Amino acid sequence: MNIGMMSDTYIPQINGVATSVHLFKKYLEEMGDNVYVFAPVVPSDEDKVFKVSGLKFPFEPQHRFAIPLSQKILKLSSKLDLDVVHSHAPFSMGFQAIRLSEKIGIPHVHTYHTLLTEYRHYLPMPLRPTEKAVKEFSMWFCNMTDAVIAPTEKIKAELIDYGVKVPIYTLPTGIDVKNFQRGLKYSIREKHSIPQNDKIVLFVGRVSKEKNILFLINAFFELHKRIDNTTLVIVGDGPEKQEIIHKVSHLGIRNKVIFTGYIARDDIIEYYRQSDLFAFASVTETQGLVVLEALAAGLPVVAVAKEGIADVLIEGKGCLLLDEPFIAPFVDKMEKILKDANLRSKLSDEGLNYVNQNWSMDAIAKLLQDVYRETVSVSGKRRKTYDTKSFFTYLHDIGLRFF
Image (spheres, rainbow, N blue to C red):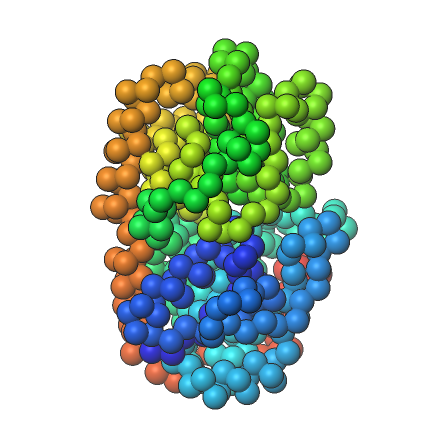
């Protein structure tokens, strides 16, 4: 099968969507499919990946807003003889997928990776849509496709509540388990001058409001009072970084918090493998790949069991969970793991077993193949038509004037 994946992000960027697209491409190709990725950011050493034009975000130069050249992509896609197009964001490349689906007559599958209602704060107030408008837009976009993939049952239920009528499949992104259990290449302690007797608490992800990193900083501040020999390592970058650095300095723990910035995807494994605890407090995740990656590397997790995290983690299976983001119990659980070597070892083993049995990328990629085949067999020729006039009229009617 020939598959075209349209995404506004791709490796070497560090985020869940980029990771998901990359992993599915890798495993689908190992099973014999041809996967072509179209994105505004691409690696320099990967086949079947096409870079589209993009503008830098003013405060996040590592990100691009795709400006796809429709005719160019249409011509290229026709030559590739695509059987299905798979979009990974309902924005510029998502619109391109809708147009491509109609023009060359192939079905369109969309993965609803992100709870868009939780990201409205990135737009200034004059342009910020209401929560109702975002839900209506999500419903409209999903209903323009032939099938939708939700990472968890909760997200599926939410989309149904929005009014999505097309088939919705629950299919998470799996974990490249073998890659997270390979040998080490270098010492992160030496790289960042971390004392040998310090316990390393790790966070990996975008340094942004929705990740609740200020909560983690406050929790680590309290933890450090109890366990002096601890270091917090924050892997990633984002719009809240300077605010976080200011907070760390204000608390007087700047020498105990390390900001790595963006690092190569393969190098992140070194941090998972060499840390003592993974801390995660986001309450807006659709899945939360990083917590599963931590478990795959044998790293115990303390997290808040909200949204997608509640769907992918089970208490005791490599992790200790909280129902709500409260500082005191979060710190208690981190302290418990760091002070009890036997518990840490037990959670490490349980986490590895849990990921191997339930989140192997081999099995999940086969399920995605089934979704494609089912959608192609049912859809045949494209059922929906792309009406530019009604499209913009609809956006105007629900108040999304920022498009």
